[in-house]
Amino acid sequence: MTASRRQFIRVLGGGAVIAAAGGLGLTRCDLMPEEAIAAWQDPFGAEVEPRRRALGAALLAPNPHNMQPWIADLRQEGVITFLADRTRLLPATDPYSRQIVIGCGAFLELLRMAAAEMGYRAETRLFPDGAWTDEAVGETPLARVTFAADPAIARDPLFAHVLRRRSNRNVYEARHVEARKAEAIAAASAEAGTRFGWTGGDAHLSDRIRDLARRAWAAEVGYDESYYESVRVYRLTATEIAAHRDGLSLHGPLIWWLNATGIFTREKALSGNKFLRDQALANVTAQIDASPSFGWIITPQNDRPMQIAAGRAYVRANLAATGAGVALCPLSQILEEFPAMQALQREFKETLGVEPAHTVQMLFRMGYATEAPPSPRRRLGDIVLA
Image (cartoon, rainbow, N blue to C red; front, side, top):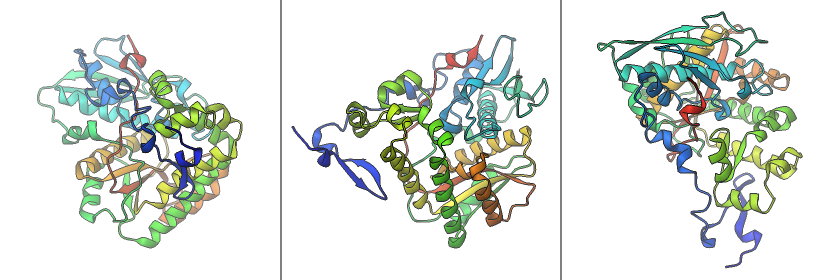
């Protein structure tokens, strides 16, 4: 069957490219590789040793750019020495590794929950060899976690939602999240030093945040260093996804066709191709425009323990939202610390009424959407030193 490029590709919805591939018989082409998402079916697998079993669940934590920047050293009996993988940092969009540490906080929270499920207390000591400076991120352990058997330890009910938790990037319905659900999510996310906020039914505040988020996304895409940092971790087609099992996954009939014909390749995107850059801008702008509500997490300080606490709080909010049928998705661009974003950050904090010394650690979309697919995860052996 023949079809012109015009029949195959249409530009709709603010300029985002969408496939019209059904008539070409390609709807089953370039599916997400099953092995890349196997952890979402059974994170424990055949593992028997408690630390390894808990790590299998912790691997499902949300993290920036899906870089999964985690190393778990198991060479000491009964202990996990947890490090950040310095080869997986994001120096352009996250120059102080604040977002990386937040992702590590989410990892530690899932690790704690998984240990409790098995009757173990995960006794966590943060930065046992001293806190990192901005110049020495990842040079020493982020945490040392000791597993202690405790049959009486309370199980966390949020753990029941781990396998269904997603960062849902779909278009959201227009209706706002009900106050009772948002309040339950806030209560579940409570972590010492963190504060949960949300737009509620304040349409004016939601409009202001949408405008700021659009401008922030345009700033990230328009700034070469931050845009190309994302392009370098594009995983284009199922073949690349299976090989890497991390980064930003792009697959399906349209992506396969564009990649096969040379229209959309990493090399072309890194060359500054305007069409591809415009499509990146349009894609997330469409998500922002279809966001009825927003939530955020604030801390009074911006030190490493507070960043970890924010990660713990966010993953708990995400799990509680999953249980309530509410979609969440991080919207981190306006919180990035590179110079081009600073003026927008000040405007954003003023919009929320945040005290100058406090830090908005997380901003996220909240709403209702169709279920999102899971994102790839690396093999447990890829992060373990044993």
